[in-house]
Image (cartoon, rainbow, N blue to C red; front, side, top):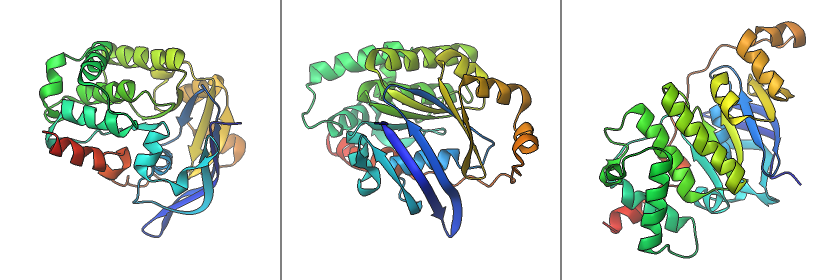
Length: 278
């Protein structure tokens, strides 16, 4: 049975339909690429899977390990092992990173982690993403560079150890060294923890480093094509115009992106807990 099954998913926001019948499957321990022009629904799909309340699902289903995600809150999806790393990680003034990490880890489990174990996990994760440990005492993402914010997302992934991770343009704005660091962490999570991944990127470099075995192309809010890694190479070399020529698919103009609510990362409860534990 597939780990994630998305069937005929229709989604709208403010009476505008964004996803128009998406079908997608990700098996246990599978690395999957999600490609497509900007503004065609890729980030929306990830946000809906995670449970962003801004979007309204009008038709279709999302099942994960046989459970209906659409019946779960964001926090419940998080506890089921679903994780989303944001394209533009948010800053939260007043919340210390370490407090946030600990609250997130405790919210992810029925049993609270001991202080010693938490420090060890955090120290190891910080080393893995090449983040100075003293940064955990700073407020969450505030004053962080773009690369530091992205590595911070991967650090959270390592701590939470999800069974299914979605990465939304985790490589955007990263230099070569940072991309190598992030890709190494992704590969370690995939190989050692057998986490399944759905990864959005516009650049073949990241995909060359993490080696997806399956790729989807989303155009106009639908899955237009499905294939293996060769699909990534062709898109990288030729863009998307060949899809129009070969399949007769007219590519609509980019829609403006809808801002992502803070509620999508399963952090409302976490932030409240972090504030009360200071």
